[in-house]
View 1 (cartoon, rainbow over the protein chains, first blue to last red):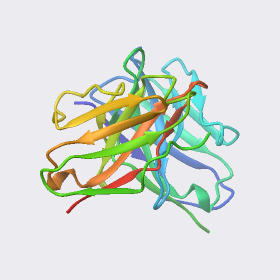
View 2: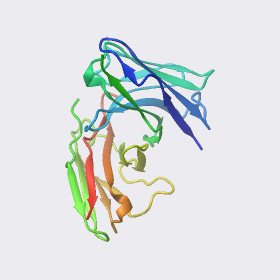
View 3: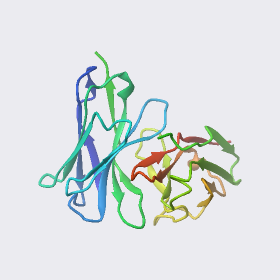
Length: 121
Length: 110
């Protein structure tokens, strides 16, 4: 059974960089059948797609966050990571990592439990 | 990119059916059959309930069904049960190779 687990600091200061890692078990980030993505949910609000990455390193980002986001993949550790720079209180959210199926049946089929990141001094 | 539009809340009694709508544009919901629906109980991982507009993953009850007409997709839950009470989100692939989610709908089982 595939499992995804987010990890990283739960508190980040304004203007600093938020860094999270998603560790994948029970499957491989090197699979050609999937992308790997980050989604967040601010308190009391809906889900927002942040971006996705393929094992080759090819990325796609939400245009509203593109200038501040970097997603990378480490196939040797079976992990992928999120960096969000110049954070403000508006970036406070639960951050989820998820697997995105490629091809003709696209969907986020497995999700991590999520990790709350608070931006505060 | 604006979020897909969902009603903030819907409710129904046990055994009844409810429908949640998800409205987008011709550049997302209307242009692709990559619409999916997720059930989210607070504090837990979102769960995929419907993908490709109307397909159900293995293990998801056939009480859940999806459809689409034009720029609006819909999730119908029949035979409502107490455990169906949750937040539901739609999602769609877009013409710019990105993903949009809806604002979420809180389902209350009365």
